[in-house]
Length: 172
Image (cartoon, rainbow, N blue to C red; front, side, top):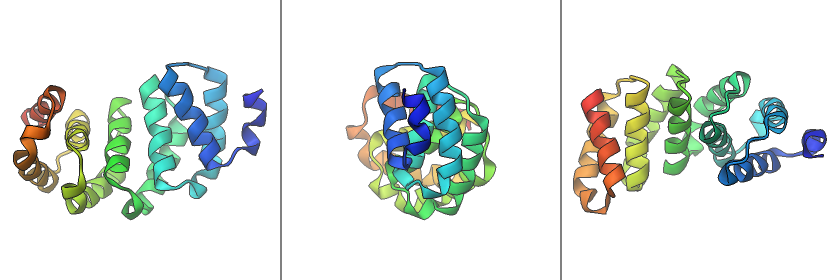
C-alpha cells in the first residue's frame, strides 16, 4: 500500500519511511524504487537532514538509485552551507559506500567540513576521512583539519574510529 501512496508523501515522509526500513534492515525493492523516483522529483524541497538521511538509507541497504543520487549530489552541492557535521559525514559516507563519484559534491563537502571541523564528533571525523579515501578523492586541507582535530580529541575515539581514520590517512 505504501508504494501506491508514495506520490502523496512529502520529503520528511519519504526520508523517514526509507530510514525506518533501513534501520530495520528490511529490503523492499519496489518500495525503494518508488521512493527513489518520488524523492528525485521532490529533491529541491528536501532539507539537509532529509538529503543526508535518504542517501544513508540507500547506502546502508546497498541499494543503487543513480537518478536519485545524481539529483541529491546536485542539490546538496548547492545547499552545502545548511549541512551540519552529521549531514556532511553521512552524505560522503553514503556516496563512498556505493562507490559513486561526485566530484563537485565532494569539493563542496571538503570546503564546508574544513570550516565546521571543530563541531564534528569522532565518528563524523572518521567517516568523512574514510569516505574521501575510499573514493580516492584527495583533499589535503580537509585532511590537515581532520588530523589536527583528531589529535586533540584522540581519547574520545573508539577503536573503529581510530582504525578508519588511520586507514584513510594511509590510503590517501
